[in-house]
Image 1 (cartoon, rainbow, N blue to C red):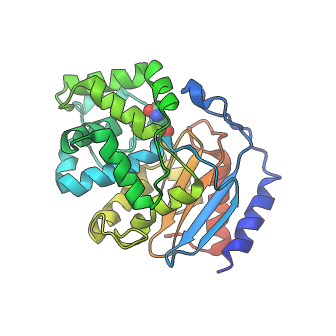
Image 2: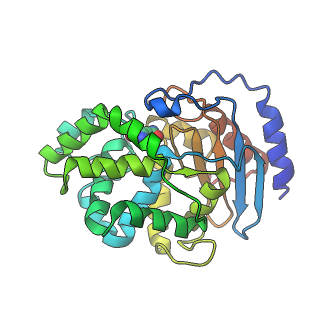
Length: 303
Ligand code: GLN
């Protein structure tokens, strides 16, 4: 497959795409990003790398981190995690509160904020030094020692935490948070503040495409476990736009309000895009378009 040529074609096509999306405003520290950044990086299952545009520039991975925290929690607790978080699409916005009351504090899935906060609570319980240990895990799976938290972004999110604080307190009232609410939120804001390039993101998600094994052969999850998490990314990775992403792109993936998207075709490739302009559902407008073009041009989608 001529990936280099295809990525160039995609970048060229995007010049004509009328992107009307807006950079996130919910985290003040992120509101100053240059909206015109665009990068894409694809890593094949044989570890061949193809990058284009701003693919080597770091950006805030935000909710993409939710797929990595759930993977780590799954590695410790296996199926027990589903006693506290569901596996159903929510059909609601990423930061919605509405279903929690009806569902007695059990979030629909680990990719909406409420679900990710419960997963963060599990990691705060399982890890000795939660923030340090999580970073060590991320550096290990990505093979990149330079990956770090952006403390200013974490602080900015803490300063404007009202919705996430409401979710965490509501979850606590149902008994679905074991630790101190502020400690769990602090972990959650830090996981969201992690910065990666498109290349680092593609490498971090390599194990999802490679039957649970990282690029350098470490088994993170079993084949069956990654099959399950990929299924969840497919059905829930884009909140109330998961159906649309499946319809247009046809790959499991995860987005973040920093403008990143990572998607994968099991046993074939992992691809990460970055473009900060978001559509109304909080997903990268150009990123979705680029991935739609990728699966259309290559014919490679899971469907
Ligand atoms: N840190 C963001 C939040 O909690 C993550 C949201 C996202 O990327 N969709 O609101």
